[in-house]
Amino acid sequence: MFQKRFLTIRWIEECESVCLEWKGFAIGDDFREGLNKGLEIFVEKKGRGWLGDLEQMQLICLEDQKWCRTVWFPQAIDAGLSKLSIVCPRNILAQTSLFKIMSESRYPGLKVAYFTERQKAQIWLKTTCKNKDIISKMPANLQAGI
Image 1: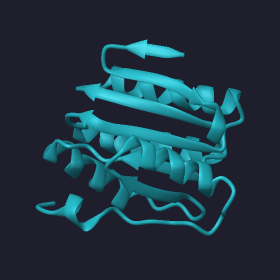
Image 2: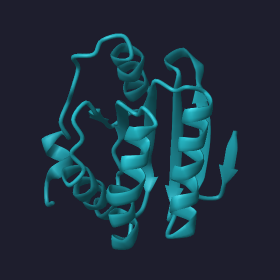
Image 3: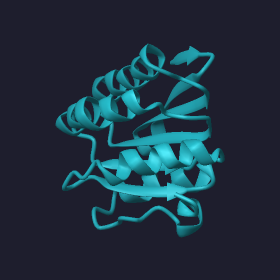
Image 4: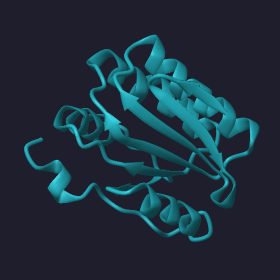
């Protein structure tokens, strides 16, 4: 659906979710274009969930972290985002960036789960789109050193 050197966006029909697979560095306009395109697809398809595969992501700069928290997340919540499944980055700097964004982005009704494998993240989305009471926290081993 959308392909750039830093990002692939797909629609996952079985869980009615958009999947963003980040690769390497995406800074400024690239980062924002990717999230905005994902949100556009989410709205267009009347999405039920969002899978952020950050396994290969390298870093989210401070300006983009702030933009994500203050601009993008409110827009996504207003658009109906209520289920977010995240495949955690392997890179420690990207883990730190993710933890900062998510710890400062508190939205009632947003259910978030963290995984180390995309398949498990997708299964959670498929399940949680049917079960409204599931919520998870970032695994402690991924918070080490943060």
